[in-house]
Image (cartoon, rainbow over all chains, first blue to last red; front, side):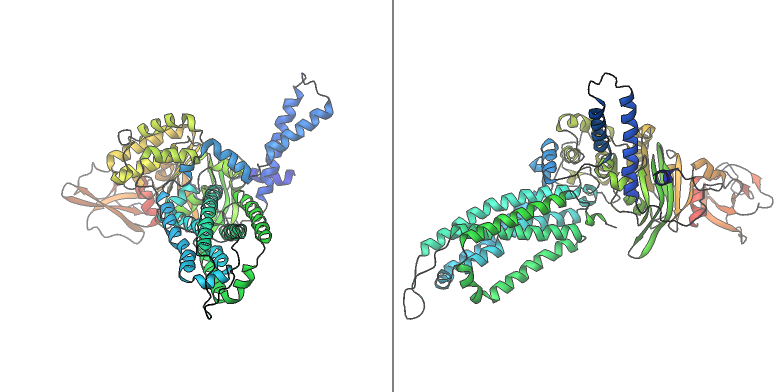
Length: 325
Length: 294
């Protein structure tokens, strides 16, 4: 251990009259600096704690208990805190307010809301203009809702990040004590919650319009066909699954791809998915129409759990996009 | 103490910094180099905006990347291209920065008022920043770097856009702050550093070319800086550094490897414009021009 911790004690370089450095080759000794730092911190904490224990005669606890306490203190002092989503939320309560999360970017949130309202009209228009076909197979509505549900989340994320990049505030934000990933994680969580709330309303409107239209004549010889009932549970399950799947993909992009690639990957991916679902709509719609509500619900819960797990990891990670030249 | 230990950094396949080793203790450190010499890259490494390809940067022996938020919380940074929100007031902006720096809500307003007064923005604290001049925006930038009372202050081209009066105010602020913290400021404006920097770090070709006090840098050129009448032909080992005006007359300030024959000893500004060569006391600008070419 001494050999490793001694690295910081090596002699300085020789300098000439104006402090010019003599050159020597880097020997790559810094490969495990992270471990060294933790190690040296633990050693210092142990020394401090040992000194404290030597003078701690008043401690009524026996030696084994004191030893346990000392170890716990050393570990607490030496090992960096593990950042979780919950610790982030708890810490945010003390310093960050909702208005701080989107500071300077509320205009982006407003624009995203308008854009979302426009996009969310598509399934309703489809329902009103192509009622016969849609009523025969509500799977078309499920597919539409799946594709449009994450729009608010995606649009807000994209616009806010774009504005911060263009206004050069992102560089400053990355140097703050609150890491940029934690800030983004909190924003995504808030936007996710807002999107989820709106999705419930959205699904209710779609469901109400669908019910209002009721069974209609099919186009073939004016024969009335029974329509498959639109399930609100399935609709909500599909909408939330879409939101969480989109969120997971966006988190993965943010965690592994540098700006601006991280912003440019997910929307085209989702558009591709849209095209696939539209092209195969005739085949998929009957399948989706018979999607059991429980399956949709379980999928939503599972993707939700996966999303929060991914979010927790993201909040505690160092941003790959911090590498800005 | 902040130490940069054998740090190298490549960007887009080009080596920007190679095997940099530096130590920063209390005081003002000036990074002096022409544009494109790697100052901003070094600043970004010090603020964890970039990570070293090799080597490490340590604060009191601990790697700053490992320290993470515990390091960032001790750093105040003014980027070269300071981004701000034109629709907001300095006070609201500083509250936002204070929140991101983890300052408790209670007590931060008092600190913000003190910082706004320090940078001379108390009267404009509640005006939208879109009405501000470039110098006022730069002062907001300095204020946000100071709001959480950082132990390390990193300022990239902090005097850009400041008028002479604001520059003097800035120097006074930096001077008062440097007593108990590390202040690292990069600039290519020599006069910014001459009076306040205790140490000058000069980068060339991605390496540390010089790391010394301004006095030592000037002393290294002692006896090699001359003023000669305009039109004097220069020898091969002599380089023109600048031109100096004395009323209507112009004299040349030159660097000479060898003593100039017949040169008298004088001081800049006191010589007779028509007089022959005289040796003059070197200044930091001479050192900059000698190292980076006149």
